[in-house]
Image (cartoon, rainbow, N blue to C red; front, side):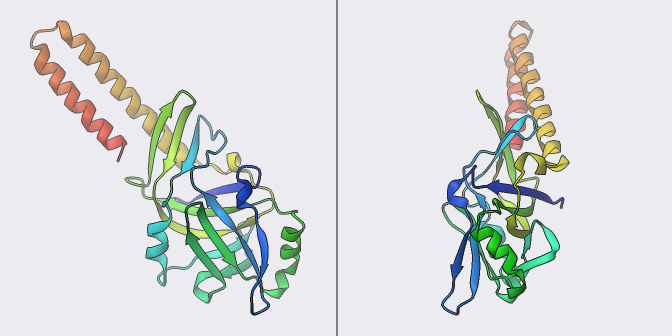
Length: 223
């Protein structure tokens, strides 16, 4: 599966701001949200994006004890903060989004200080979708929206210095958007054929066949 990356900033979701907590053991933890539910992104090239509540539930359940998620700073594999398999990274999905809590090593005290001083402005995560069920598109008066319904795989989470949501979109999501637009155009063409068939012989049969084609296509698009 293709890997996508998304960022979230405090400006987009103030309650996603990173915090520094001290555990009972005396260890320092970085706590924040790597993703928020029901928050519309900025324009990603003709559409915006929203992660639906519960999108991480299944992947967290599947990956628990079976797969490893790492916490990285700026997605840099050379700056590891923790990982689930060692117990230094904890992930959970609540009503707000994907929450993470990572206990970094003492050698990463500089990153902890940057977060405490609010020099670090957001969080991010890397993921993959199941194209058949992980996403859907819709449109309204404000434009087109990609809805992320179910994350298939989660690779890393962590703080990022400068979130850049629009810049982190990929050809992967754009391909999905273009495919959806093509499907919408096909539905509009069928609807036009239905309208034109009103004056044709056997119009009732033709309209019935066209409506069936349109219903099947809409069902496919909506998953």
